[in-house]
Image (cartoon, one colour):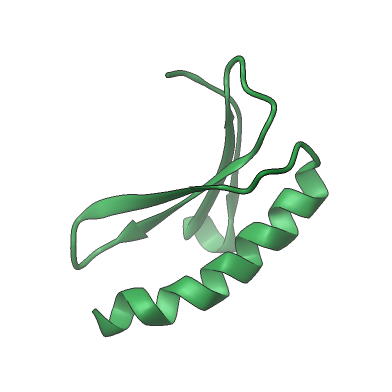
Length: 68
C-alpha cells in the first residue's frame, strides 16, 4: 500500500506515515536484531499528537528491542 505522508524523526530512527486512503498515522521502527520493522497504528489523525505518541512509544520500545 502506498504512503501518503511520510516523516522521519530522531535522525531517521522513527518513521511516521499515513497510508493512502487511511486517515490515521502509523509509526515504524527497525529492529536490527530481527532485521524487520515493527509497525504500530497511532490511532490519531492529528500529526502533532501522532509525533508525540511516536516518540513516547519509541522511548518505551527501544530498550526492549535492544534487550532482545
